[in-house]
Image (cartoon, rainbow, N blue to C red; front, side, top):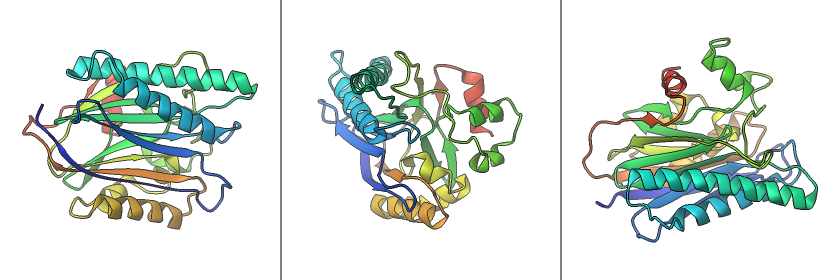
Length: 273
């Protein structure tokens, strides 16, 4: 595997409305020393112990993915690992919820960078963005009632940020015994910027502005700081978190290909929404 050179920085802020930060951010290098794993989780504020749920989910996800017995040598191995990672995270949060006799849940968006390949596992309404040539593409689809309405063309995509039911999740970790993650992949190139963020960030910044704030000429630290600061200045009423992952060098590859392993037509529609 040819090495990819990344510069990364994560930043999380409790915001100006919530009393505690229920977002969690985590990264880990796989045992091969080359594959990198990054993830963000946003504990569900409508239930108790959201911060516990997000932290447990990321701990479990990283343990499963980086401890995958088959290794992470091929795209199929990686997709098996991240799917199992999400399922294990869901079960752990579900079991902890039962132990505490108190409902708790979280979103999760995790990515594995392996050479020029990007693999994504996603449940909930946190997001992964790919910024390339000044344009931001959403690589995940929101598992919300409003997201369903956009895909069904009941409302337009520009209404999603201000809709009263924007944060009503219809898929998450910890609420049900089983959950089904969206698994997708993309190809990254030198000069790309990946942004993983909680909804407290993207709901307060338009996609075009996320692209403008994620200029690859800046450092990853500067990008994450500007994203979080802008969301707060724009009046975010939630915790605000961002991973900025700058691809300083990636092995030569074909032009970007995004493959979604489930609901391909819906995913394709989201990219062009």
